[in-house]
Amino acid sequence: MPPPSTPSRAPGTWDVIVVGAGPAGATAARVAAENGCATLLLERATIPRYKTCGGGLIGASLAALPPGLPLKVYDTAGHFTFAHNGHKERTLACSTPTCALVYRSELDAALTEAAAAAGAQVRDGTALTTLEHQDDTVTVRTNRGDTLRARAVVGADGSAGRVARYVGVRCAQVDLALEVEVPVDERTAGRWRGRVLMEWGPLPGSFGWVFPKGEVCTAGVVAARGNPVALRAYKEDFLRRHGLLGPRPLHDTGHLTRCRRRDSPLARGRVLVAGDAAALVDHWSREGISYALRSGDIAGHAAARLVTAADETTARAVAGQYERHIDSVLGAEMNASRSLMNLFTRNPGLAHAALTRVPPAWHQLDAYIAGRTSVARIMATPVGRATAMLAARLPGR
Ligand SMILES: Cc1cc2nc3c(=O)[nH]c(=O)nc-3n(C[C@H](O)[C@H](O)[C@H](O)COP(=O)(O)OP(=O)(O)OC[C@H]3O[C@@H](n4cnc5c(N)ncnc54)[C@H](O)[C@@H]3O)c2cc1C
Image (spheres, rainbow, N blue to C red):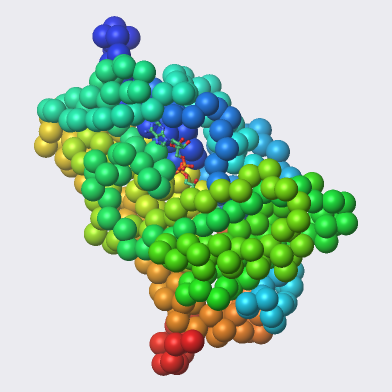
């Protein structure tokens, strides 16, 4: 593909500036660079950087990684244990163990390296502070005093990012997640090896998880934002019950996860948002890496088209196509996960019983984890439809 820009760019002028080097931004930068755009990837932190995340890669995430990405997998989940408030524990085997447990610092650094190898220039330790848009140019200012200009900007600066505020992203669901990374002794490591725990918690829509990574376990809890005291109490109880409260954590952090409203914008002028910045996260599992990788890819292609848009009417059409593309692929997934989340919040006991006692329900989830189906397809199956209808008739918990 011919480069959209001529080599004689003025200093500080780029075809595409991408803000944030998480999975969404690193992917958007790689794809824009592969499409011949002079691309700058800005990252506030120094790479590699820590990110509060379980680092669980489901099949959809693995399928969206660039081929041959060098990445160390610390464990692969062959079994899932489900529990409801610490009771009714049941362990089920995956037909094709797929879910890979990785460190986000390593994944994101590898994705950023792939963007650099494709020709993107990476500037870490540099944060966007403001952006404005006039005619066919977006102006970005940074904490280092740079004034940069581009024909397109991709905001991939995460769930509390500035670009989302500029675009006006609106959320239907905001959750707080608290997570620790704890070193574990050999016996504990052996107990968790190859097995992920998902426990439906005492707060509405909450759950806790343990992800094994060899000598370390990542464990945490998530619930709707607004009750941090109860969430902290749940975290303590959860970690204590699973023998993970004693060891001094390597990391002990919290982070918001946000799910967009259906009508939330994904673009403003020549500025697009992707990943957490666009609040593209599964309502139920809060899985967001596959959303970040897939939306980053779509954003990278759209940004390359914005670079060649001759006028603002064409640029608006490209931004509109971007919104529709995201909506048709990821919006459909989020709509289905929203109904699953409603069902789960309304009656977690029923959801737990269905998952652990009705084999087709687990087979569907297992196929989703392995990347053989999607939440949208599951919710359209007779099992998905019947479960949703039954739960709607039952009183809440
Ligand atoms: C506790 C927890 C556990 C999770 N576990 C999983 C899991 O196991 N599997 C899964 O699929 N999803 C998980 N998620 C969701 C997942 O972490 C996110 O959806 C994913 O990180 C989104 O990627 P992103 O690239 O959009 O944003 P991020 O990964 O947040 O990256 C944004 C980047 O932007 C940078 N940035 C921010 N502001 C600026 C600025 N002004 N200028 C420049 N750079 C900036 C940040 O430093 C950061 O590097 C979890 C989330 C939480 C909170």
